[in-house]
Length: 268
Image (cartoon, rainbow, N blue to C red; front, top):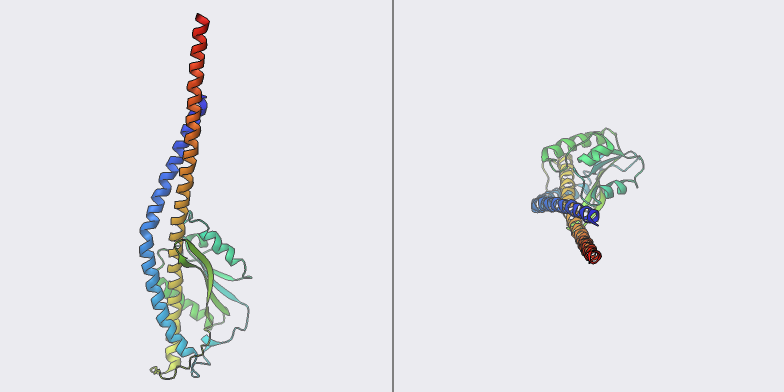
């Protein structure tokens, strides 16, 4: 029995140590949630503004022949895949990689350490991915699209629905879909097509930044929920082990008393 109590005591200490770790990681995730949500909202607001301009331009006759509005003519697909820099975030990274299986032979450009480890060279950090990184990537992708290096460009990211729910999704950004808006009543200088050429670059930059920040907010929220669940499980395990430990200790004491009583009876 003494061996059982010692083993149980060591297990309780081990689980308790894990509980302290999950608490610490949960607190770190909590501290990042507010800032991540503010950044996500700001990026979404910018993307929405430039998207309104693109919608006005893509519906005009003057821009109809722009190479950015061409019909998809091939099956060469380029996908930016955004995953996390770390694990211990529940199914966040796994869900992104599982979602990606539906696409056949895509050319993948990863963002985030976990994505780079899986698919090769790319942008190592999704948390530290900057506006400058997005602008450089946008310039590169727009140029490659015009050169015909790929026919379609999309971003696989994680949509932030709530702190408890995040969903993998894909957003297609090139070629630009023609809108039903004619742009009548809006004046663009020097002309609509010139503005479109510049606006597309800003649009791709804005969408990339928006998806990266939304994915990071999803990662932080997923990690917070995962640590909360791990903490609950650890506390339950400690409670169960404590009950077993108390029973084992009580059994050991009862056995010692029985042996003492038996020994004193033999002496009499």
